[in-house]
Length: 447
Ligand SMILES: [Ca+2]
Ligand SMILES: [Ca+2]
Ligand SMILES: [Ca+2]
Ligand SMILES: [Ca+2]
Image (cartoon, rainbow, N blue to C red):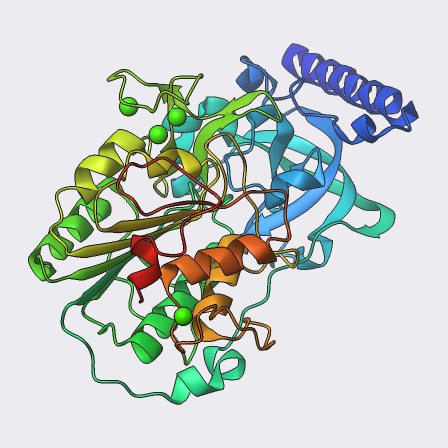
């Protein structure tokens, strides 16, 4: 009885704090009133409040059936791990005999009263060692309401390759044995693995295969949990999960396919860790212990990319070691994650063209629709002559009817719609530029 009374008191008290907190922040009419945060719930002793009820407001998002609310819509669009105080996981009511459909709430501002519990989904549990135990804090919905009429971001589309690129869909090419590709996307965990990462991998897979002659066998895909996000007639081949074991197996697989004659295309997708100078936040960069970062990195931080559901991640030092264990003649690197400009110096080398979505200190974004990475969308547009939305474009600056990686970069830079500055290097130094030479190495490199 004492416990029950104690719990009732605690629930009421915490609820009061929640309501009081949001009443105060709700008075502010400036932009910062969006930045409410969940730090009062996601505290170091959050587990002592398990079972208690809280009232929160935020912007609903859902990936792979895992719901969450952000304290600001911008987090949906940033390909870095969301700071823990800036989101909280949302679980649908479990007292029902069916799973309610919350997809209508994606991008909407909600007020939710929910009971605190710890997430049990395996990929979330797996990343708790990386992100901290507070990453498991979840509110199970008791009541929910939409608080305004605005849609802040959209649910991403599932596309059909044959609808979007009918000409490429119907092409049949003899594969070129010397072409090898690696397509990688981890996504952190089920709550953070955005569908745009899948869309990017899927579209690039078919473009490489049908337009540029990369064989199914020689496109090595390392994706999330090793499974498709959904079944479709235009599905493709996923070889490995984006786990420690899967990534290592993919590198071994690639080693067996490559030689000094190989043209290697490497696409790295999903979230990245590093330091954002505009936010003054370190999103998962770590101290550069071996002091191999470039002199331009005043923060002396290694950048990172993510696995799926693991208590570890991939530092740029580890990525460099793995990539440099591969033998190839020419390398093309397309780097999408946040802070990917900070991977360029690590991955530098002669006969390599490296294109990154933004600078070493910059978060990077999806397209305005949220269905693809901005960098990936513009790259695919350049190399196919058509955007994934069907608009004809021409990136061929010298009129030779082929798109060099230099030309692809110039198109990407000119077409940028988001607050990111794509970076480029093709001279072996690893020093990034936004004004490459039209006669440099990349001007003679094609997919
Ligand atoms: Ca380092
Ligand atoms: Ca760095
Ligand atoms: Ca780096
Ligand atoms: Ca050209």
